[in-house]
Image (cartoon, rainbow, N blue to C red; front, side, top):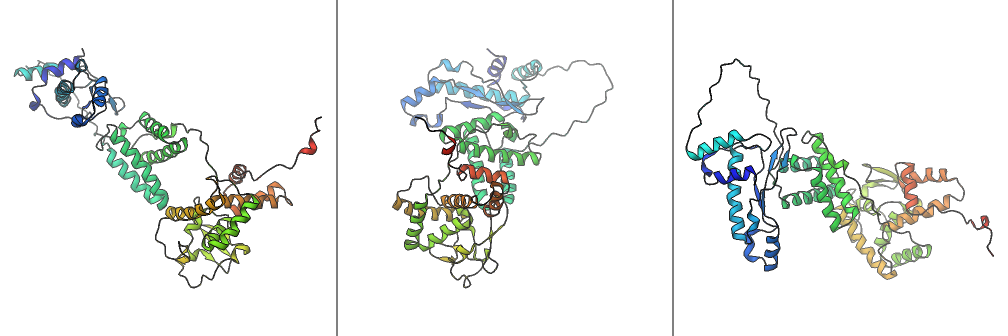
Length: 451
């Protein structure tokens, strides 16, 4: 039996006599993963399962070398010999109360506590320890260093979100905030408190959270969460809240992103014909994705004022830069209606017409047109592998292959970068590989027929 358990037994009836200190986390009782406050509502199976587990008291104490809270050895005190909730919980409450006392009085698991034990025993017995005789010695007392002010979980999350909001676009911040708040919720559900120091979150803590995401979703979602949490800790590191962004050292899992397929020539023609006859608004939306080589969400962001009809320019708010200038090709310009009657602040596309007010988030606008196009996909029996994004892939594939008939691959890609908006040649080449835009010539003539 451990010495701390013997010490707890000797002082549990003297709660009111000791002062507070703050170098440790509040001791807590683990009760088999269930809430004992709702014990009467649990099924017999749930109660049995909980009692099969070890119940114990757990707490953390600040390591004097690292300055971080470190989980200490669980205190069981023999309570798991009892097979009923009432006795176990009663004994653990007594031990928890006693542990709080000795911690308040100065117990330190990293030091020799013999003097403390003697001091506590004297208090219990109502005695006053006699001061030891000492030789008078002149000493120089060095000033104590100022106590480092720690940042709590609540303060850290608030700070990071406030700073990140100023640096991100509205739609991107919504997704970022959602992931960070899910991480915070998980922490609070796993015995962390808002008043705990941010330093209590370790690399192992984050790995456990990411594993829980992986088990319930996908490697891609797990990797996206890792990226956002790493960004969260980077803000804290940059503002001297934490010493190191350890999340960057957590590995990225290999995942296979799902890409929209390109349309076959006959599918492309049939869809355009159907849209022109049945949904002219969606038809023009798709033409912007196709001939403008734009992403659907970029089309959703367009305002009337973003189109310079006279100079044939379009000003696009892209994901990788504030504003990207692209040309409006003549083939697309011919299909535009008269826009002079609209305000420059009007949206180019709304649910009912070209030009008008549409108060909605960019993601919601994109979702609306995605759902509208789903009706078209159902007509043609297209799977989830096809979508609005497929038109961009199809256009760039067709354009590359047409240009490659009269120019070298390098010339084609140099011109194509200006159309697609890729920032580097490497990024464009990866994109072309992903959508299988580059195919070899027929190599039959290089092979000798067999048999």
